[in-house]
Length: 444
Image (tube, rainbow, N blue to C red; front, side):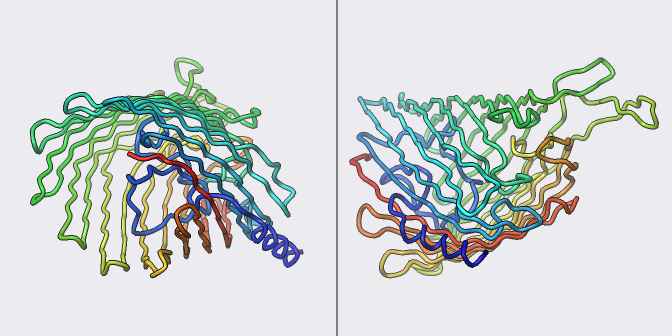
């Protein structure tokens, strides 16, 4: 059975033709190539962006058409304690268009794709959508960005209890501004809103509505580096959950605040160092709830977090072709993928990459994530309260451009999750292949 499925998977891989190796839309001529390529064996990075509202920012004038197919065989596609293999095929097309007039740029982006699963009866296929648009403006010494987006897709992120078990819809809008004051000082600020909900009402416990406000300032000199101070406040309503408090039944929610002091500097052309220290304050809006103990109601305090966070990153370019990366961090996350109010997350990552003479890049790396769940709840997707996950990923990657328009990538990865309780443990090994094509005249 497993050998037949693998043969079927390889047949699909060899039959597939289409688009860019990376699912994200890049800014032509503006994005810098990372030292360590990203291995997309999960959807953890889907929707990440350098701008507001889940958008990639103004891509430049003109149009860009990308078509891609990513195919992956995994020996534990659902990522459960009992392995069940299968093939996930993701065809997708993305069209973006930018219109510039003086100091104002307008743009729109649309993506349509589908998750197709073969060799596994647990999953039903589903469409993948992403649509958005925005504007970028330069006024004197200030840059202003704003926009909105909508996406809907099956969830295959690495921290969900069962990969692909539900479909989620997210809508976002926001605006950000940054201004240069003098030659060294800059200030920035922004506001954004995001609404997340599970499609077809598999559960309401993961629904949320979030407002985020941020502001910061930075001092930068070539000989000194960059010193920055940033703060943010997030007001989160968990609209699918209610809590019994001494004052009655209320909607659940969180208030998150953070303050970060950061420093980054290039040491010559070979070393880049980034350091940051944060104060993190996360607390439920309802600080107490009522529970039943031995048949009697008891008032108990709810979990919160007040403490330090950190982040550190190092990039070392040993030669024009060879590079090393390393990073570590602690932060607080609140997402719509797990039944918990928030998650205290420690991460460690490292990797090595080498650019081959033909323009392809060969890389290998390691990721570790320690997640401690606070305010865990039981949902129809998670029958047990989750306390802690330790997630490990090892990967190797070969990818790059063939000519001007064709991209390809091949990667192998192994994932492990060790959980408390152990019912959420899994091991999986996967091989993936992505082939793509890009057409357009979009530029800065």
